[in-house]
Image (cartoon, rainbow, N blue to C red; front, side, top):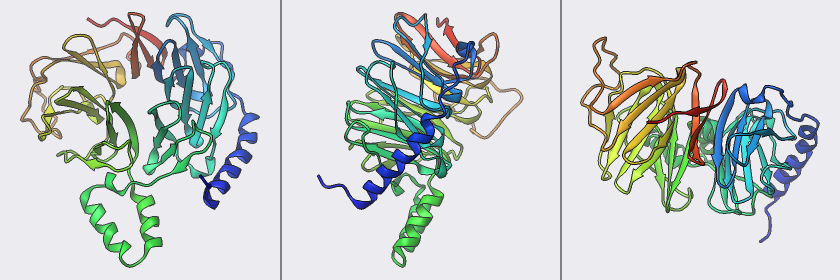
Length: 348
């Protein structure tokens, strides 16, 4: 397939910045396992990423080693596909390794965008997407050799979509400019079977059945940010976000509010064994919920002093109250990444 002129320019630009990034390697920290770590993923091995370009790899989930990485940009997300790993973060950086994290290359580096990537997901070893702040959305179909930017107006609130369509009738260039300026932060993407889910800023929850080529936005009676979305079964989808807010969708109906009586922002969802689900958040907060989740008629914006959590909802905190960013289950253990480093969670 012929590459467009824009793609060639983008590739040249990325190469020119890669040289700069190579001179700014991640700091090899003696206490790296206690540093700010932001994401974790696992397959036959575990990968953790965090501040200052830190990447840690473990074969057993207990002993971690920091890897030499050609950037010191903060890394916000990672994904493992076989022996391949991708990591993304600030300065629109995208890193890749094909040997379980031993050697890394820069596939994208654009600090001039002033927009971080916040998540990355691959459908296979060739086709993947990276999403981030202000609608940042890149796609690759060749394992990251080239990345192409996309803009998805369907992720906007319907009123904003209508406003943009009116502009587009008059001026396509201005439409593109406005679209780029009002797209929300795209915080998390989750794949389940053939359905891709999105959680983002300003009440954004959406799904796609064609690998993110087009999106169907959910209506949610909430305008705060969501930071994770996960299907719990074929009929139930869970979303968590700012100020302890949890919403559940059953049988493609309306999104229902779940009362947690916690104001701590929830960063990620961990589906446990059996009927238990965990939401991990700031201040070391962990919300434990039993399925099926309850339905609350309370106002998500209310903060009553006599709050009573819905049935089956239990809030607890880890001892040092460090923000819990994400967790994965590996070799029978639950490994979490936090603002104070790696922790093993004791989930009941």
